Image (tube, rainbow, N blue to C red; front, top):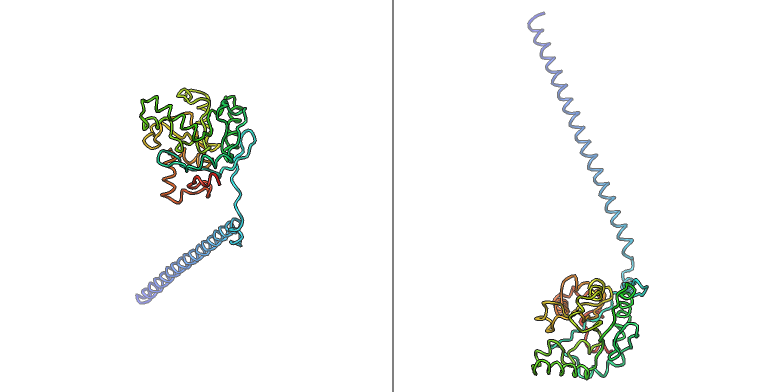
Length: 297
């Protein structure tokens, strides 16, 4: 074989090898492109499924006729007590009464037609025996539930007239040597006491010993479920203006009571927060910043 022929054979073999390499690269490139296109198609399909699923959920939860939804009032949240009583958890009363926020002079007269007698089985006092009718189903359900649990909870002092409150205030003034400011931290002046509203009550006894009773323990654990809060807690006199009273509980509404306790606030602080932040007004007009006129309207 001549030298020229050998070189031709070598060149042909190199050419064939290069063709094979180029073909292999081309096949690999095509495979990569096909894989990319296929993955892209799957991703689009998956996205389409997700969007469809979300849309389906929205269609189930959102009626087509938005105006119809606005016209239809929402059902009130109902709390069923262990004794089977149904209470409206959304209803509340946030009327703020203290030394700086007095009731109108005519409230004492007008409120009388809104008062109802507390059944004797729920109280242990025959001197003052009435409560505002809005509070009656909540306070009686609470006392009945406590008694069903073997706890002898009873209403001691609910609504008081201005006259009775004035008599109690003057007696306290005499006890502290005529210092009305000091007396007002223990017994409120007439027209500035929550007892004048008919929205609160003292339970069992107006005494510091109440804190060590099973009744107090039960109230701390359950009162919010009936819309009541401890109105004058410890270390809050600089806010409420009233000494700690373990026996004095105020109706504000179930949802309000739970939120107040969760936030660790007094009624003064809660109302200030609601007025500052409109988002706090989440339970409707009845539990917004109530006025005395609304309570007796």
